[in-house]
Structure formats: C-alpha cells, structure tokens
Length: 321
Length: 305
Image (tube, rainbow over all chains, first blue to last red; front, side):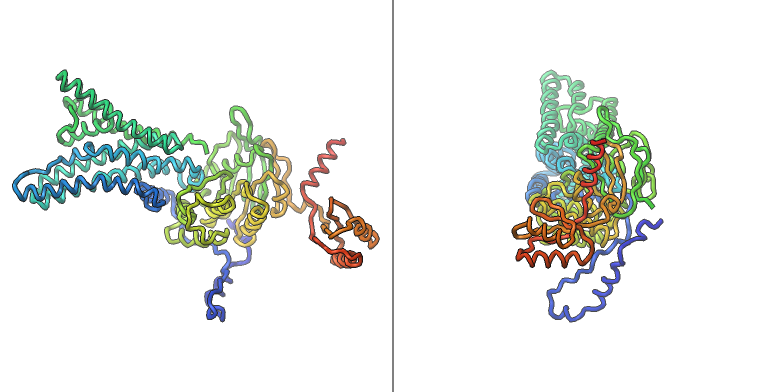
C-alpha cells in the first residue's frame, strides 16, 4: 500500500543541502534555515507503551510535576505534611531509645494512614480531580480516544497512576520511620515484618481510596464539586462510623456490632483488613469481631476495588465525546 | 486509492438521524466536507475515528475497515476537533509533546517533532507559556499541531477556521493548503462556509441532513473561465464604458468591476484603459467563479422549474 506515493517533492533534498553546505550565511550568523517539512519514519510504539506513557504523565501530574507552579503547591505541601510527623517520630525513636525512654516505635506503622487521614483525604480530594476531571472539563478526552489508546487503557492508566501516587505518599513516611527504628537499633526482624505488613496495608488504602475518589471525580467536570464530594465521602463516613462504633462498642459494650460497622467507611474497612489479615492493632474503637467478619472485610475491600474499576470503565465507555 | 470510503453509513439518535445511508469516496488531496450546522459532518468524523459507533453501514480509512482496525488507524490519522480541547495550565510545548507520546512516539522523537510542528503552524516564543492565556488563533494552531505531530497520513480537521477573524482565517487556510502541498498529508476539512473551502480544496463533498448532496472536484464546481476584479479610485461608470469600448466583457458588483479574463493581454488593456482615463487602480486581482454562485444558479433554476 502506498498512500503517500503522491507526496510533494522530497524535503530531504533541502535538509541535506542545509546540513552539508554551511555556506557563507553561517559566518554572518543569525540566518534561519527553513529546512522544510520533515516526515517521521521512526518507531511508533503500540497501545501498551502509550498506556505506560499516560500512566507516567498522570503520576507526575498527581504531584504537580509538569504543571504550573500553582498546581504544585497543594501536592507538594501535603507531601511535606505527610512526611513531617514520620520524621519527628523517627527522631523521637532514635533519641528515645538512646536515652532508654522508649523501647519501641512510638506509633505503629499500620496506624500512620489513619492518624494522618485528614491530609490524605485533602490530597485525594485535590489530586483525583486533577487526574481525571481536567480531561473532562477541557474536553481533552477526544484527543486521547482518537489515538491508539483504548478507553479501558485510559481508565487503567489513570487508576494506576493515582493509586501509585497515594501509595508513595503513604510509603515514604513509613520508610522514614523504619529508618529511624533501624538507626535506634531496634530488632530488625520484627521492625521489617511490621513495616512490610504496613506497606501492604498502604497499598490497599491506596487502591480503595483512589478508586472511590476517581469514581467521584470522573462524574463531574467541575473540580470544586469533585473536591467537596471526595472530602465528604472520605471524612464524613469515617467520622460517622467511628462515632457509631464509640456509642455501640464502648458505651453499650457491644464490640461485635461495633466491629461490623467498620465495613461502612473506607478507612475503617482497610483498617479492619489490616487487623484481621495483617495482624495490626485496630486504630478504631473495634476491629472485625471474628474470622468470618475478617473474611468479609477482605472480600468487601476487594469487591470495592473491582467495583470502582468497573464503574470507571462503564463511565468512560458511555462518556459523550 | 480512496483515503476514506463510506457505504450506506447511517447514524440514528433517538430523536434525529445524523447520517442517512451516506455513501462517498474521498480521494487523496484536500477534501472539503461542507454542510450546515447539524448536517452530520462531525458525526461522520467521529464515526471514522471510533469516537462514535455507526448504527449501520461500513466505512474505511486508508483502505482499512474502521470497525476492525480502529487502534491501528488511529495511530495513522490526526484529528483536530471542532470544540476547545486544550488544558489551560500547561504550555503548548508540554501539551503537544504529551499528545505525540499518546500517538506512540518515543520521548525524544516526540520532543523533536513537537518543536518542528509548532514552528510549522507558526507558534514561536509563546509556546512556552500556558495555553490558558492564548488567543483563539493561537489555540487553533495548537489544536492543529497536536493533529500533525505524529506525521499522520491523513488529518481530519473539524471546523478549523471556527472563531477566527478574517486574517486568522486566511492564515489557517494557507496552512491547511501547505499540509497537503508541503507535508504530503491528505486532508479532510469541514466547514459550513463553502466559500472558504473552495479556495483550498481539490474536491468538495456537500452533505445536508446526513444525506450526500454532491461530491465533485473543485474544478468542476468552478467554471473554467476566470475573471479580474478591478476597483478604481473614482468614476467607475466611465471606466466600465471604456472597458466595453476596448472590447472587454464587463460586469459590476458594487464598486468592483468584473472583467472576463481572456488572456494575458487583458491585464494590459485594463491597465492602459484606466491610465488613459487618469484614474488610479485600487485593486486588480484574478477571481474564480465561486461554488456558491453555481449553487445560487442551481437554486434559481430549481425555483423557476
């Protein structure tokens, strides 16, 4: 097939001329050579490489890299806020153990996400719309979908980029605390096991929270609505659930019912999985009451991740272009 | 070989039929797709790109069936949408590099092609500024650049002159002409203004309410004969009479005299005649009969029948 056999006179002739013959103009300087149009005969990467490029681009976008300085303020500021307490805790661990005041890390690795969930929720609320709403608001989506990328690739790349972004946000402070523990010469074996299971927990937090945040953000092209919706869903559900757990579990001494309530908010749900499957101490008034509940917590978590992905795929299958 | 063919292509929405049994062949070159707003131009382009599904019928681009080879085809064509599609807070360079990567170009090639393409569409220093601060004309150039950056074999330009002032319009049309003549890329360009497309297109396809009205080469639309538009400083009446005495066919459109161009000699006669009358020439330009005139005559004929 020769669709371009009727191409205009070869531009390579001009190119070669300009390259091999510097001519007298070069000496005088300031002459712009119009080398004409050059075609592209190089590699054209496939769908997977394109999806990977979109993933990297979006991940950079989550932290404001390659965006205007204004767009960097929030993600960078919140990243610092996420890391500062870990740094303080690491110093406390080193100094405290040296002085013989403490003999363990002052805060369990697995509790870090819940303790700093306000910063985490704000980060998600601002960066999930950054990841998907902008393409809707500026109508950029048709430009993506008129390229080799398929719709499902777009969704997977966006989901992966925000999840990895959130995972990094959670993992870096954990590693800072871990380094502190190692410097304080706490037992390497148990610290490593603790931090590893906390990292698994962080991955679950990242997948669950990113999925929910993206579903909300993908419904609206209005950034403000997305921000408000995500904050409301993440923070309000946690506040309501822990309040209920407090009332039922502590005031009425019904730990079992209180444990089940944990299913109802994303933060307490993943915390429940950490408690039952990863052996962490609960960060809520009550964890899953028994093994059956633990299995349910794990299944609900997995179903939530799959459900968010499914909702996103169907949302982008039907999106108006 | 046809770059685009459609066969009985139909798109029905619940309340409206956007395309109705459309069958056309579009050859390499610059092809204008003309129709009123809502005639089905954008729908056709979206179906070709797989952004929209046809209700029935087949279509091919570059010899490949659109329904079966969507992914491969989309790597070989470029698309400039009608609507705004540019993020505000990134620079033109960053945006076009990203779009080049989304077309499958490796990072280095994407950068190089972006610099080249932005230069070709006429964006220079401003390409490092945020797109949010661009004029409509500059935004149209960025939109065009992202459609060309991966050196496609065919570009689909949806209303590229939308929102441009007359100068911007002329520049955009000249640029589109160059896409074909200098870059060697086939072009399908839509407009609701026949007049501007006839200036640059090799072939014009006219659709209305999703139905093909006419498809033929621009040369067939415009008559072989050409005219000279002449405008003089004063006394147009006398000049017209003098032209007629000198043996020229003269028509009038307001202050402009339309002289049938018989050959090179006509220019001399016009110049000498005007000079003899002591007038100044304000304008002297060749002008083709416009496609619109053909249509007006057609409509007139139809009305009188």
